[in-house]
Length: 181
Image (tube, rainbow, N blue to C red; front, top):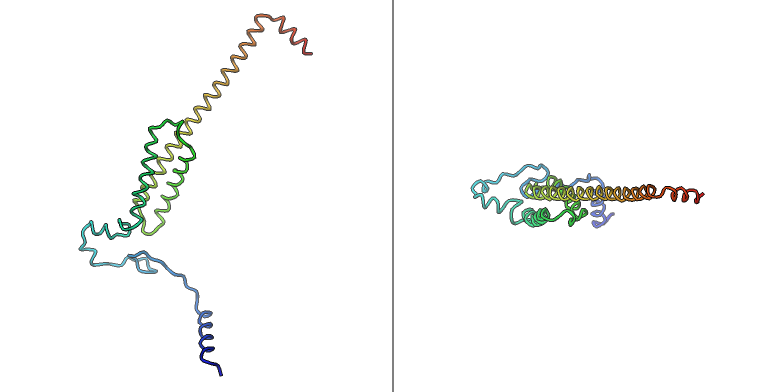
């Protein structure tokens, strides 16, 4: 005869095997689990706008509110760089701002609760980074064009010097060509 302890262990083991594995569903504080439906709260209807904002899932009690507030500092610092010359800007830094803004803007639309305030800050961060990156790339292209122009001018001066020496003493040039053979 089986002891009660062994019987309990077998029953426990069999229940694990026979039960299907279920996924857990997660919901925000205002949603019912698994359905995604928002639970009605009669007390919310009587609250003032300030109280609703204070108690909202993206209100000042949460990181969803303070993250965008702090990120405005990064956006304003990037915007302050519009006053700096393009030669003093870092392309890698501004490309990082652009990428960060794009990635986190997308993330703001995926998370629950959807945080439009954070999305707007990240979109402006992307915009500032894109504008500064464009300024730096245009400056580098201008430098490259000037560099080629300077090389062309130097080449023209060298050619002019050769032409001048040929015009002054053509016999010397002929002798120099005959001597190299």
